[in-house]
Amino acid sequence: MTTTIATALLHALKDRGADRLFGIPGDFVLPFFRVIEDSAILPWHTLSHEPGVGYAADAAGRITSTLGVAVVTYGAGALNMVNAVAQAYADKSPLVVISGAPGAQEGKLGLSLHHQVKTLNSQFEIYRELTCAQAVLNDPATAPAEIARVLDAARKYSRPVYLEVPRDMVDTPCAPVPPFDPAPSDPDAARACATEILSRMRAAQSPAILVGVEARRYGIEDKIAALCRKLGLPAATSFMGRGLLSREDLPLTGVYLGSAGSETAARHVEGSDCLLMLGVIVSDTNFGVSGRNIDLRGAIQALDRNVTFAHHTYPEVTLEALVEAMTELADPLDHARPNAHVPDYAHGLPDDDTPLMPTHVAQAVNNLFDAHGRMPVATDIGDCLFTGLEIVDTEFVAPGYYASMGLGVPAGMAIAACTGRRPIVLVGDGAFQMTGWELGNCPKYGWAPIVILFNNLSWEMLRAFQPGPSYHDLDDWHYAEIANHLGGHGVRVHTCAELGRALAQAHADDSRFQLIEVMLPRGATSKTLAGFVGAVREMSALKGE
Ligand code: S1T
Ligand code: MG
Image 1 (cartoon, protein in one colour):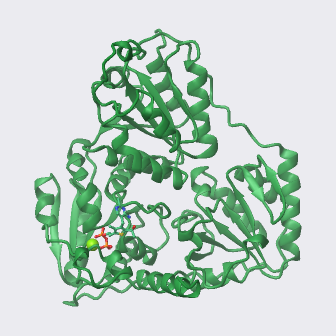
Image 2 (cartoon, rainbow, N blue to C red; image 1 turned 60 degrees about the vertical axis):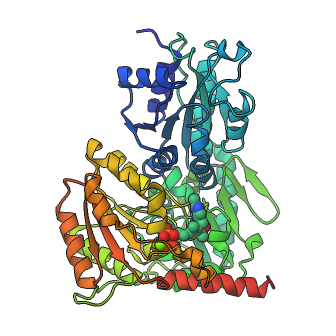
């Protein structure tokens, strides 16, 4: 069977861990879509709007620690997905964007083409700003090496990449793509770096470990847990790292979110005189509300294949190589604290007519997990994200840094597709208005997420920051009723007893997606969001903003 540019690309994606594609066709990508279906190299799912395609493909990469893949048409498709790709870049998600494009001769007709914005190269230039590697596959002689270069960059740097496939090149014969080159670190550099870190941790009074998203992106949570156990140290996770290490038997001091998160994690991180940050993005959401200014110059940061100390860096030392070298060289630390206090999570949902507040959702989910086992969780931005911090440790997919609305529902659908497990989705009414309708695609794929919709008739997180204006008010769209027309089952609940019953019934019915519309009063927020807003206000006041 002759290899073509399209089949070579699909095989290369599969060889590097991609297990499916999400997309929406268009005339510039129809030839490629035909090969996707005829070749059956990878399963594919079409959704209804390119932002949802981007969010779903991003989430697929996050939950599987491999490549997520989005296939879209030129112009109207690819440019419609820009914000979702930007979020994948900021959150270090290895999303592969494949866009169809005009054929070589089409651009020479002297006509501006439909879907063209400024020049035929504009889209490539826009995506150069959103990705870590890009290529146009317009030459069969170079296409295999270009595909390998770009896809390997996605795996190495855990960032989005962009491949443009002119529609007249899809069936062009070419050689197969070379196998994945992981570009391992120099083992001597990793050992030297590990030796320096361990000696600093041994000399420190209160060494601490903070774990971030790269632990999941590179699939090394088990190795980090083994290191923590060998050192006798608990770990805290960053806000973006919520849910990391949840499958490991390791005492976690909770999620660090400064004065708005776990107090144990805050003491652990802010009180440390040797903070080792493994795969942590130093961002305002991860550190913006630190109760005390953490002297990051005293910290050690392993991120983006570099390990940085106050005044020097070990380049090209991967997180995996560092953790393996440390585990090999480590002994239990004198200041080991293996039995850290694990935070108490919200339990005990009242079984009565108590009107619902956001924290009751966390209590209801925790009760469900106690009864039936933990489920993966996808959250959107809004108070649902902060309420999610009150749920016990489980796998999370959330827009923890870039913080775009819209990820929640498509991410839940991707988790169902990639893992075969049923997810819980937490989403606000505002974010649901953006991408919640993608649920209408669940019946054709047999996905049955349980969606808990926080209906406070508001952009409440904004109101928490800026009380007063009426533009935070949203109308009541009766989402539960709409769910029934989208092929799912919807129920509206007002009290704690109704929520407990609805969640139990939703869990019992996995024949279709479930939507539980939780009615909340305007102005009500979770304790965690209230704490976060208060801390942000305090920080602003301290800075005189
Ligand atoms: N547009 C997009 C795509 N993402 C955003 N993050 C925003 C706008 C700004 C924004 C927030 S939080 C929020 C908006 C509009 C309101 C969310 O409303 P809803 O989903 O109903 O959740 P809740 O009512 O719990 O707040 C962040 C601060 O940037
Ligand atoms: Mg809302």
